[in-house]
Image (cartoon, rainbow, N blue to C red; front, side, top):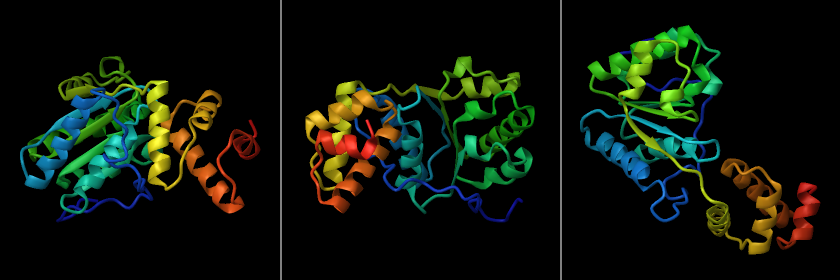
Length: 240
């Protein structure tokens, strides 16, 4: 699978269009260090600067995938990047999938916890890490488990992960989530009343990805039925 020039794998993996730094809601100084480090990673890739090995971790709903994909979007085609959502690709042969990835400027492993305990995958990522390091390339890892608590069997891989620069991404407060929903609604060209945002938040999962999906569903329904976003309308569409 190795090639003479970097080329992204064709795995049916796509980035969400809205997963950009501009669309990531920041509340005060929360997560400012992590976001600054990721933007710096993007800038270094564009400048051809030295390699970076970063880990971001946080609870589900903290927006880890959004941030990883934001790095990919910010670089675009100006550097070679391979984004791997580990939950989706763990069924592939690890050695085959990782072979040749050291030619990429950046490899993103989104959700490394999904391959913990799988010896084939752990070995493959360990060797990929070393090849990226030797080649002066970069690695970005996202995890919903704190790095010291990752149940990695291979001690050498665990030490490599812990040797990366690590940032914790905090989840948004409920108030910040309401602000994020309002911001996303404004970006889509409609107003989300505060009472409707509060109603959605109290009755839905607190994962921002799911909340944004609900918001998109309501927007599409309101356009189709030519109705404003009210609590009765939300009840009709969502069933709660």
